[in-house]
Length: 159
Image (tube, rainbow, N blue to C red):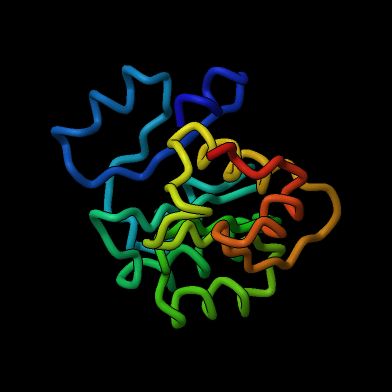
């Protein structure tokens, strides 16, 4: 998020926890308060955007919201979905891949890439590159494979 804001991108986040809203706002993010599992709220938040990024981070699981995100993105006519996760479950990957939207699924894996995990900066670069890809990508990428970095037009992070 910091990387996108620093580049001048307008970032919107759906946040259901009031205690986190202020932290997002301090980052320069527009916060839509509510349940990310509400497809109507997702559609409202995504209105006028080209890309929706879903973060399936190590602390959570987006299986309870993925249908709302896919439906809300369709309702808002969003072009592209980017899913980032640490070995996201197949049903989540399938929901994004079958959404009818351009999509890039980025699997960072729980195992290390080439002997080590990519840095947070490298992962942020991968997510940003997925948003910036030209054309109408429909990709499922595993960052443990150097070819995934090439598909994003990035160099494999150094060891």
